[in-house]
Length: 279
Image (cartoon, rainbow, N blue to C red; front, side):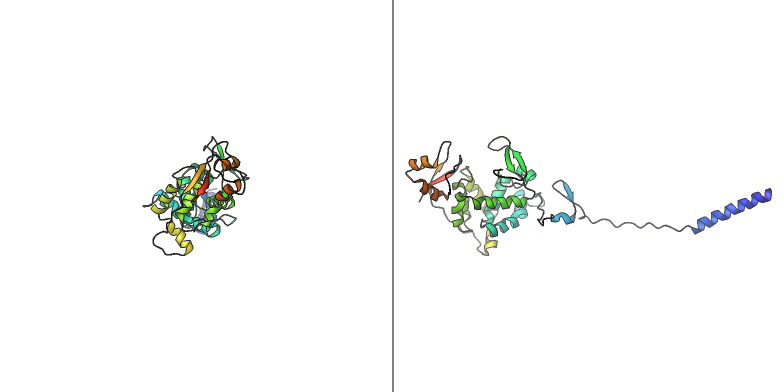
């Protein structure tokens, strides 16, 4: 009995030693740290580097954020200048004008419409079948266009100006005549603010936005070409005005009024500035 017990203990010990000696040593390799660019947070959402371009090939433009010694306007310009120049090549609208309008109307990309709707120019829904965002403007909770990408807003802004007859006279101006464009926009009814042209011109000259026009045109002029727009007699449209009533008031034909303002129909908007006489 004692012999059997000893034999059993020897067998157990032998099996234990065999098991320990045969176990392979496991070496755990440290994983290499992931590259910091693997995941990028843009506008509150996380994406991967492959998301730099969407499936339809459009580049992702991020909302500009202050950094270094650049102020918010300079960051906005650095972010969207290439888009403005591309639109200038395609639609013949000065990049300086587009950028100045974007800065002014979107609060350098920080207004609610720009942040939540990628709408940098306050373009309202009018016939729009895409996504919408509602925002208080002239009236409470007006309907504005909402874009997936910021550059779609820039493209839509260009198409807005090129497709409406009242802006046709702008395209008779030289592309380096930013003063003429700034004043012509208000004269055509784009804005009711009397200081709107001055605000655009101030931005263009302060940040030298005319240099982007020169880059597209291939000019090397150190100073922008400035021309004065001929003085004009204008009329601000009020409720009840019609093309016929205005033609009688100013002793012009409806056709003459249309030609002066580059209009193809008799539609008027309250606040629109009509050119009555061009000297």
